[in-house]
Image 1 (cartoon, rainbow, N blue to C red):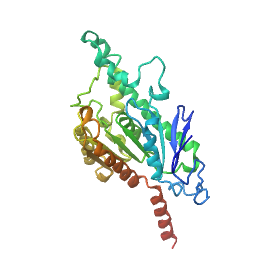
Image 2: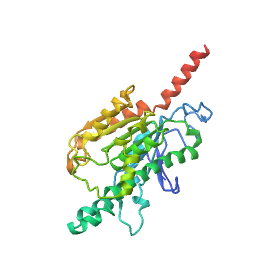
Image 3: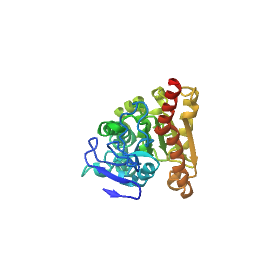
Image 4: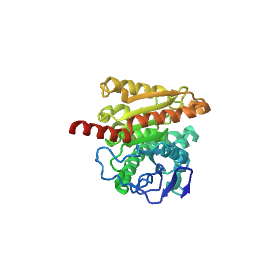
Length: 321
C-alpha cells in the first residue's frame, strides 16, 4: 500500500480474476464508513447511493500501458470524490504471458514483415485477428470489474458508474457501455467508434472471419441501438490526430444525436483539443490540464451521486409535505 496526501492506493492481487488498483476518496472506505461522520450509509435508498462519494469510475489504459501508469489519474479522481479503479488489459502489465508477444507487438508485427509474408500474416495478426478480440475481451473485463466492486463493496453498490478509457481503453469502454446498461457515463479519449478507422495512417486490418463477426456484433458505429439506454458519452479527441481521426467521433455523435439521442442530445459530445506528436495522436502539453477539466466536468455532471441523493431527499420531503 502506498500512502499519498489525501488518498491511499491499494493493489488487490486477485481482484475480479486479475490484479487491480483502486483508490477511495478521503473520508471513505470499502466498508462504507466515513471518517468525517463515523456513519455507515449503506442503509440509504438503493437508488441514490451513499452521501460523500460521487460515483465509481473504472479507468482503462491505452495500448501498451499498465494500470500503474494510471495511478496519478486514480488519485485525481479520488480527490474529486470518486472511487477509482484500474486494471491491466490482457497481455499488458502483470497479465502478460511470458513468451507471448505483448499487446502492442500483436498490432505492430505485421508492419515489420516482408511483402512475401504479409498475405499469411494478415490472417494471424493485425487489428481484426488480434486487436478487435482484445477490445471485446477488455470490455468484458470492465464489466467484470464493476460487478466485482459491487460484490466486494456492497455499501457502495448503488452509486453511479462511469468508465474512463484512453485510446484502446476508450474503444473498450464504448463496447462495455453498450453491453452493460448500469454504466451511466463514459469518456473515450482518443478513441474510435468505427473500428475500420477510415483515414487512419496506422491501420493494419488484416483478415479474420472471427474479427469480422466481432465487428458486426460489437463495433459501436454499426450497433448504435445498443446505446438506447442513453449513457452519457463524451469523446476527447485531438484536432490533428491522424491515427484515430477526430471525424470518427464527430460522425458517430452526430448520427446518435439524430437518432437514438434525439431527445437527449446533451448526453453526447466531442471535446476537441490540440494535438501534435505521433501523427497527432498525442495531446499537446498545454492540452493536458484541459483533458482533466473535461473529464471532471463530464463525470461531475453525470455521476454526481451526492447531488442525486440531495435531490431524492428534497423530492421525498416535498411529497410528504
